[in-house]
Length: 559
Image (cartoon, rainbow, N blue to C red; front, side):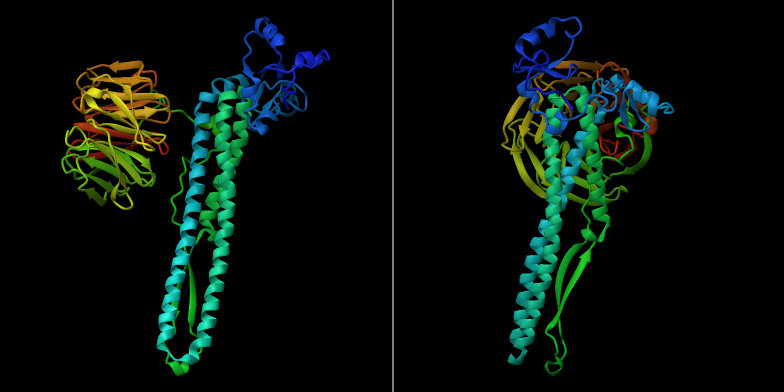
């Protein structure tokens, strides 16, 4: 456990009590103003990072109470044993890990831990588990409401049947309604118990999501690492809970119906039967990928050098002038067709499922959640809006007026980033429809955009370039090589920040490294590309969907 952070550790050692103003994680003690000054200029400690005590107090109590050194030998952790999934001091290695082969210097693991894929993975896993709990809770709440509605329908049917028969059935009717109410209470209570359990676990996940932001900002590298290990185990346990619930009878959906007795009145012994049925739960559960035994050290990043797309399927979408595409979490595909002014949803095998038309011009689209997409209207001056479409109801849920052309679009954290021609790159909030300019640099009307963390990427087919900017509009890098990439249109980014761009004239897909310095051509005309226009990467499944302008679509796996 860390030292008392409220008092200066150096002064306390000299039996002097002074309040600390900063915390040094490497020294594992607080420092007063005077000691902090000496600490900052001393040769042995001048490179130590410190955190203001008021900020350090924002860390969760569990993080503050983490043991940052070996509690058995009271020595600093130096090695991480992958076999036992634990940090070790040098004495631990001699005593209990002498035969372990997979040992790693803990400094190598701690280096850049907060910006590592592992940190991003746990944030995503927390988000997915929270969404899954919300889905389950919403489903049970809807089931509870539907039961009430069904009960009212049954009561009405019972009353109508009761009116047709003689008074001697009053007693049977009362017994029937009592049984109906009893069964309703029994089944409703079962659902309420499940709902309470889900809400408790959902609250715990929400608490982790709040804590992890403070961990990332204020915790030491070791604290962040150990906290991640703790949260990872809880996330894994909750994922197992969700999967076990879905597979068990506990997730079955409760329905009630009424079966009237059709015998002659003289033969009626009972008014009817209450029928309770259970249907399998069909809620699609978000799962980024199958959990691996050692997530912190076994996630293999996607790099240009190891990238080798594997063909999964190729099919004709039976569309012309495809301008946008995306993958849904359930592996269905959505295409935007500017020629027919519609979006088309295909099943995972490439066969058509349904179309949505008559809401105006279309260009690109971006996935907002499992059942809704944002569709831009392109460069038609008479329709300057972005439509939010509900795939369940197959209708426009909400139109967003942007007052500019809007072509390429990307979604991040309740915001849409879109290309607005001469007005550059803009952002619109889905909460209040407010619009901000990121970059006012004029771009072609048919540019596309992608976003990853704090980077925005967009294509310029006139200049044959790909540009990376920050959210303040500052240019970070530009890629331009007309011999490799000609007429770049669609653009997307994988989970490790690699940028994928289609070249319509060069008939290829080129991958650019996150820093913009390296590139690799991964698909060409030999792979079936002919005037390719759009590309989409699903980061959770690591699948890549590429579409030609005239209808052919190809699906690849990146891992």
